[in-house]
Length: 365
Length: 140
Image (tube, each protein chain N blue to C red):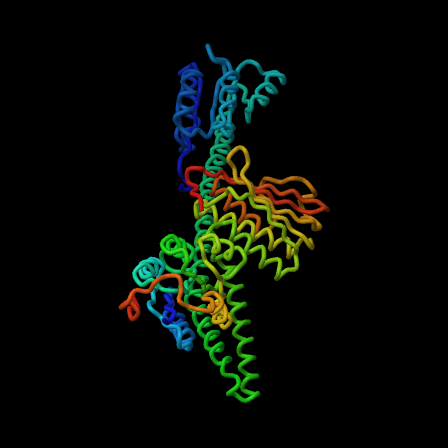
């Protein structure tokens, strides 16, 4: 949306003369002015177009301004419409309060000071424009971050594949050749045999390092056998590297899930365990994945660490400032239509994710 | 009769090294090689090997799926899964489809002893080799 893009201003009054006056006053704002002669007509416009400001008379036959405001506010799509009342009567504080309680942003008494009305409408028109711009930028950002996450997954998968296909066979061949040589140790001098033995150890170490890098980048079992074996394998490796004791409780009926769900859940578990190791100080972690009765896949990672600073034991479902890790999890879940909840206190942290799983997309292993 | 091996691995280098290691035993021969699971299953049915050395991660069907199809056809033929990804969970899946043993590619030397044990004292092998098949190889 361009900065100068016009917004719609709806003017509601049963007297045509007043509508013409408003039109003359607001004309120089250079926005789209829409006229409505009744509350009903106003609602029609609201349903069809995105309205920034509603300027309306309080006293109208049939549906009066207050009733119309009530109806507007009840509709979730119109929560953000700015309503400005204009009235020649009902000018007590109680009347004004009544208007504000119905969600009005202003209450203007007749006679109108044109500059004042114009200035007030301009503020809300600009606000609406900015809100729309922000919403659009937000959507762009979300889709960008979703694309980045997907590209990151793809890149990691590619590097892991290169390691597997390029370096893996070299290591395997080295190891087999060493094996052949080892059969001949009697023919070799003790010094040469010693070097061969060292080479064997080096190859083993090289292999282990390559394997760890490759598995952290992209778990090989994920594509081939599925989420649960991949998580178990990752948890085993993590426990070995970190000395954090990991209990894994996976409901066996989960089977295969769509690839984007599998990689996202795997990454969430991976991120959680990394946080347990880096930040919680916990010596244990528990991973639990199961179906809930309402057809969600529930993923829980719990630790007994010192808790996250900033959550104060409260459960949080909104955006937060816990770095890229948690925002990344949130974005992944948003893409899948899922939710993330974190409960953290001095006895530990529980990260719970719920993902809707379309049963028809699940094929069993 | 010599024991006939089928090697299924997408890496030429790994197949070559395996050939060198296995052919060091004069009683063993390579009856066929395949660069992917589908070809491996096809050669398995054609060549009736006595034992299969099978990679896990390959283009197309993976080693587990290939082993499942081979076991359906001739369940008595031992299959060894030769992989960079040896883990307890992979081993469990491997056992379910009839794979006898999982060997890590990075520690291949024990494989020879393990194969000897799998083949037993007299290595006639459960599958009957057909005459004329023995020199077929390399179906890439």
